[in-house]
View 1 (cartoon, rainbow, N blue to C red):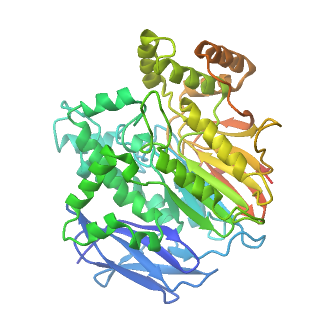
View 2 (view 1 turned 45 degrees about the vertical axis):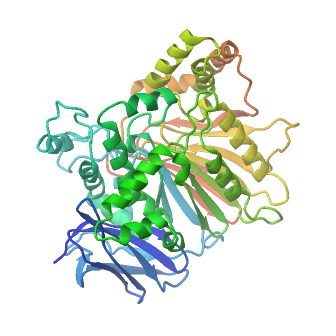
Length: 550
């Protein structure tokens, strides 16, 4: 009998359909059976000896909630016998009205928790504590969508348990040492992370949308042209990169897509059309490496009158020092089209626009100016010696956010202003980000003579980590970065680089908050409310911020 090795993960959900992701122990037919009669099935596909299925569930009723079970070749494998958790359910939406708000929980950077009987070196896990709360109090308001903004796994920072597993597989004295090397080792990371009992149940009952960041592949992935050249000359890098993209496609990317998008996806069709899809998926990953424009990792989700755009701000970069861009031209066009789609007349297509990008758009002013200065130095504005120094500093200090791509920073500001103005202006436009191991709220302002000045309230909402360390240097550095002294120091960097001033100004209006945490947006009509919850040592979530945004 086939066994359930990983999952189920409830991924895409709309008014009448859903997808559920599973990994089985052998080839089989995976089926989801809902208590209300809705169901769906799919044959597994094989990648490197592993067997996966993304099960489309149809016949759901809008505005309802139904429990479900998973069978493999007819044998029930979920819920597990004797489970201490409530039944997993699929809740179909009727969002956006005062009686049916949309709740969007988000965060990033989740290092896998150790086993329950071991000390946790980075403190309590915010997702674990959310799961424990929802399981113990089923009537508690739960997220309608969990948006995970990168670093779902850490390929370059493995746990002691994983390092012991790797050591039984190969000699860790050889590169890449205690980092993961291939697809099989990536699967170990997902087992470690998603077999956590609380996380497993949470992801089975709360839909999720995901995008990668650097640690899903390696720290500072695609920082610069010189970085990429160095990595391509590293013997173990190609296998790591291909395995990272393949495992991301399997475990995260395909679940982001609607059933309609999946049906039109040539890679998904090719992988499922053969008894072993490994070669087809590996060829896709190789194309993604050599021609990033050939692949689109970004995607769109609409929830009534709320639009979520998840933007790839890692693989889609242009790294030529003279033409650096966070997004290649095709990706820029896609983002613009999705932002403006349906916004040509009042009342517009959405009341709230959410732009998910793993890296913050608005940073503390000192850090923003330092990254802009570094970009100018690295492209040779002060000569070859400064360019070499700039590249070394960029890698050492992680200077590779939107601010390190000044043209892209300004282009995003212009696009947001265009979308946020005019008769179809939404109530809010929020950039959702993580990466920087703390949380804050920042709000931009456009000059009165700008081509467009948003009527919408625009916010940078940054939340991380979900579960990771927050070193003292981060606490001190980011607090100083927001200070008046830090801002003045940043202006000196900008003058030295002869850099043009950003087209907008911004200020911090909340935080910084440090800890393992989650933000939640609650959207009702044109109203938006924000909360921030932090995991406590008592195994609960403490609310540290609550505010109305619109």
